[in-house]
Amino acid sequence: MAVVHTLVLALALLAVLCLPVFLALILGADELLDRLACAVSEWRDARRERRTIKQLDRAVDAASLTRDIDLTAFDADGRPPIEEIAADLRRLAGQRLGIAGRSQVWQCAVLRAYDDRLRLASQRLGVAEHLAELEGMDLEIERVRVEGELTAAGLSLPAAPSGLRRKQRGG
Image (cartoon, rainbow, N blue to C red; front, side):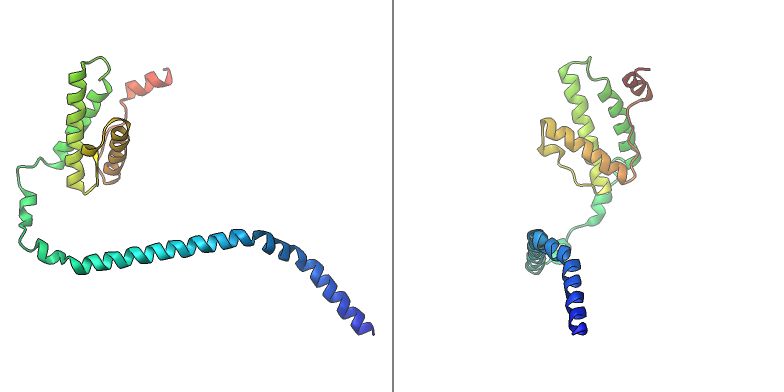
């Protein structure tokens, strides 16, 4: 009889100790199910994307498309070297900072030249850019993104000149 009481007491103690775990499982089941559903959905989307890419690879034979292209034309001497593009970007960046007191035509010309040089640098360093397709605030955001990508690719672009930073800090 004492063994039965001890066994019942041990089971009751185990039930009391496991009660918080069971409550947490019950209360958190919806979160676990949601996470599981999201993971399955992401896996399914990735699988579908990989399958589509494989189908495209089979449908388009890239080697046959590029076989007749002369890749040496891309290294033509007519293009400016990256060092020259970087110097132009630094010069134009300085002119962009002093744009406020200038005419609208001058402002547009400087920004257009800056964007052209950003495009050239992006092409040379293999950075994707969409400067020609955007305008307004979207274009400004794209400029900042491209400048960051070019900097990450190793191109040295200037920050605001030190005199401007001192004025902004109040010194």
